Amino acid sequence: MNFDNIQHDVATVGYHIEPNLISGDLLTNLSVSAATAAPARGRIKGKGRAAINETTNVPYTSDLEPWDHYWTEQMIGNPDAYQYINIVSPMFDCLIDDWTVWRMDHHILNPGSTKINVHMDIPYMYAPWHNDFNLVGLQCILTLDDFTEENGATCYLPGSHNNPLTETYAPRNQMVNDYVIEHGKRLIAPAGSVIVYNGRMLHTMMPNNSDKPRKALLLNIVSKSILPELRLYDSLGGMVI
Image (cartoon, rainbow, N blue to C red; front, side, top):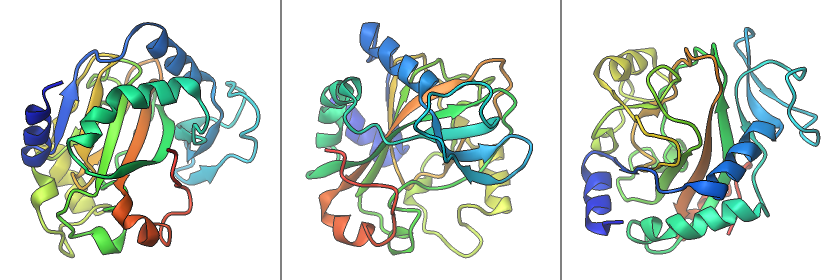
């Protein structure tokens, strides 16, 4: 890892990719975990609404509710996930002085998903941090499959983490959705790559036009300095380490 490059990329464009960082048994085990973990929350295919799975204690099978896309339960205690954190933690160390993992889960984008929803990640999605330009939140994606345009690789707006939010320039706004899709770029990366980005950068999942799910392991990294206030806004998260 070149830490100067990581710092430069995240500060300017908004993200950095380390291609093929994770491989072998660790990548295989995390991919199997993503494929078999039960959905915890997401969106039901064809119903256009968010949903929470009440049966997350059973393994995922195709006869469960047909999810458009979903997140799994938090991966507390998963030894492979903690091994992965140990590998990538130097990236976080060079970006945030005193950090913790606030959320750690899988995200699965199923074939046929058409969801587009431009947003910022924790903590910037919450009002106190909308226009906080300090780097107090990172999102980290481990690509468990190749991320391609066909299977819905994340679309992002370069440099948007440095733009102030206004009433019209804001996430979850159709005009902003359209603008990001028109002017954004895609995070294309092979399986096993690690993508770390400023959580304030506008981005969205894209339609999965392939015939296979697109799997990822997500880490939400936050500065410990914001934890007391963050706990007032986010009930799903919690210090993973």
